[in-house]
Image (cartoon, helix red, strand yellow):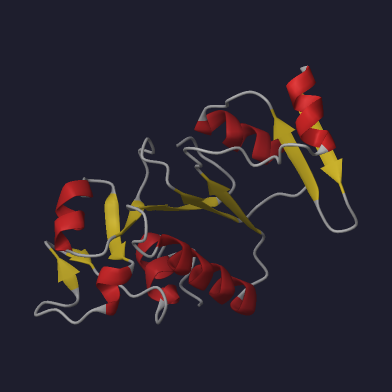
Length: 177
C-alpha cells in the first residue's frame, strides 16, 4: 500500500468465522475511546447492494454510470464500474470526509497485514500466509492448550480485547489506548 493518510485494519476469513462481530467490536471500541473517523470497506462477492424495483436501480439499469441517493441521514453512491482497491483508496483520500481508519473485510488480494478470523485450526491452516499478524474470530473464544498464539501469531479475542488487536497491528498509533 502506498503511504496513505489512514490506518488499514483488514479482516479475512471464511463465512461464519466471526469477522462481522470482530469488526463491530473494534468499531464500538474505537467510537467509545477515540474521535477517529472510521470507514468500512466490504468486499461483496455475490449480490448487488441496490434493490430491484427502486428508482436508483432503474437508473443504473437504464445505463447511468453512477447513481447518488441522498436522504436525511445518508448519502449512497452506486458506481456502476468495478474499481481496483488502490483506486478506491485514492477516491477515499479525495472524499469530503477523510478517514483515520479503514476497516476492510474480505479482501484476499491485499498485500497488507491482516487479521484472520477462523472457527478452528483447520481453517487457520487453510488460509494462513505471511500477511496474517493476528488470529481472531470464533477460534479466539475457545480455550486451547496454547491459547495465546499459533506458530508465533497471537490469538486475540476481539470481543473481549479489541485494543490488543489494534496495538498489535499499529503499536505506535494506538499506544495511548
